Amino acid sequence: MNRLFISCCGRKLEHSARAIDLYKSRQFNLAQQLLELGWEVTIISAKHGFLDADCIIEPYDQRMTANRSQEILLRGLRENISATKNYVFGGELYRRIIRELDPCVTELVGANRGNGDHYSALKQLSEISNKEQA
Figure 1: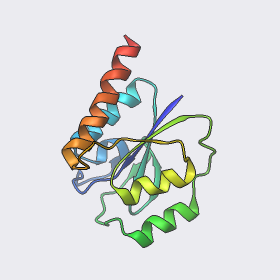
Figure 2: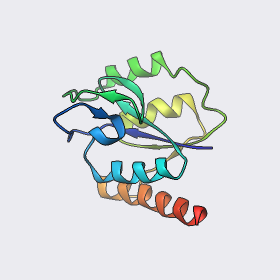
Figure 3: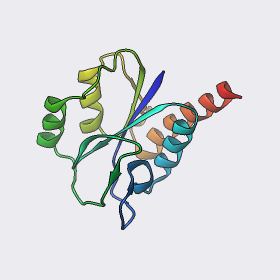
Figure 4: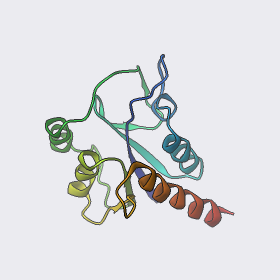
């Protein structure tokens, strides 16, 4: 089983929705594709901590800080993630949470560490997963 941990983003719908649908960015389009391929998708929310993709939430405005990242890490997950192949997409404050929970996690970052470069790494993972399903 594969699992994607993905960071929340600033652009959101203006009404309650499933977490996977609430966030409006191209990386969430790819996360939706992986979900449809049978992946587990867990969102790391600056406000809510760990969210299942299907969890219904309200829009919010909260940025991730080092203190908030540490709080989420200390609360941890309700489940053991060692049985899944884990990938994480997001900024350093998000990735460090998952690195602490799974030192073998694959971080989806590009060589240049830029946002577009990170997206390319996630897109490549999605394309590989699509080919494997075909």
